Length: 186
Image (cartoon, rainbow, N blue to C red; front, top):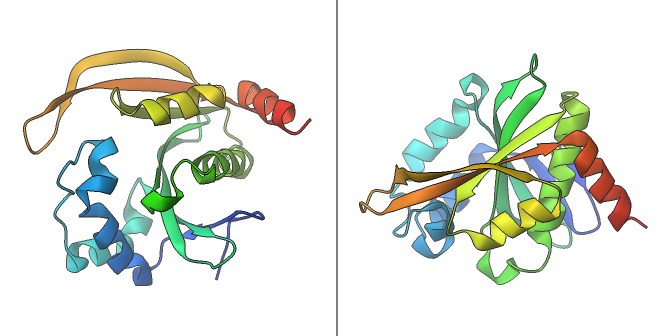
């Protein structure tokens, strides 16, 4: 098993074909997916998810699984996409999918470690993040770690049920993030 991140709380690894059934369960659960606008889940199946995992090497989006260090069980997902090595930037996403573990710093620890990994691995200087304006917990987390709101686009995205959302776009510069990290380590 190749872990890209290991801490006392979380471990992160690239998605594997064996994760397909877990992803199907998470992605089809409206309670988990509501914060990303899919109130009834995304209605996918094992065949589609396995194909997505197999094609990941040819995709712009790379998916990773967050596991609890204590029991090595998957608890969520991280992703990056739109990697631009000339601009030294990318876009990221995160979800803690085991709802009983939300609000227990797994998201904070996962995103901080993932951002450190991306800044180091790809020599990035800038991370872009976006989320629905209704996802207040995520917005607060992104601001806490040093992200700044670039803009809020009104009526930007419509979900499959026809609900229209505003989307908050944020950016996080490496130097501002490192300042946040150094302050929490004191």
